[in-house]
Image 1 (cartoon, helix red, strand yellow):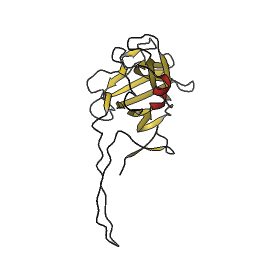
Image 2 (image 1 turned 90 degrees about the vertical axis):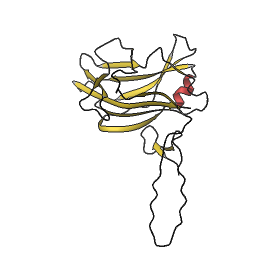
Image 3 (image 1 turned 180 degrees about the vertical axis):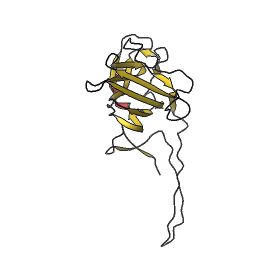
Length: 206
């Protein structure tokens, strides 16, 4: 039995998740009887977690302020936290209407597709505005020139939602030696204020 996901949160794109173990069951079935299978699914042992951002340490991996505006940043909060004691909160308004950040420039992720093409970002989120995660790729590990690509845009959600973002294709398109994870959002003109909540962000690859 294989564990499936909705790739990029799209119900018409069911996929077997490459980072989960399979679950094997042997049953002795009898006619006219109902049995129950309770599969146990865990992460495979050979995967790499580039980072796990649960905000519980009081700091964030998304420390590279690309928009240069310190008023648009991820604030770590306790009230309203999804899981544990803390979550990340971004508040946009008419004066500070764009957030453009990335993970720590000095902790780039090396050769994401060196062993396997699968690269995913897992996260929980709820948001008033459209948001996008992506990759910034560098041709050499110490290079300053870069190329940026975004994954699918995530639409507003009033309740917490879990998503598995497939970054494999954009990692292949960039073909870089090292990467940052980037995050971008803009307050739409019909809103005076918008909130973006984030938690349990995980970068997975082999």
